[in-house]
Image 1 (cartoon, rainbow, N blue to C red):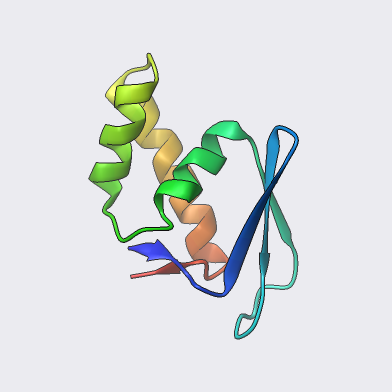
Image 2 (image 1 turned 120 degrees about the vertical axis):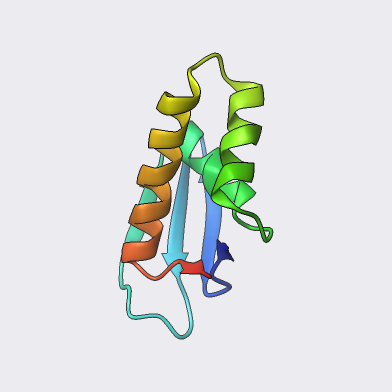
Length: 86
């Protein structure tokens, strides 16, 4: 899976904003906190859910279950707006 090429991100202060451009049905802005932004940044390259979980696990002191839950939540949100290419 990978972030759809029609979605652009920009980091402003401690938040990341994402907007759809081009061929997308989503008309809005997604604002992400630092952790969600890191997940989104990992999705800019072709990857799997498990690879994202592993990279976040290496960075944060949390259980695999907590991190997997957060990753799943971000991925599901991105799927709902069409921001994930699979």
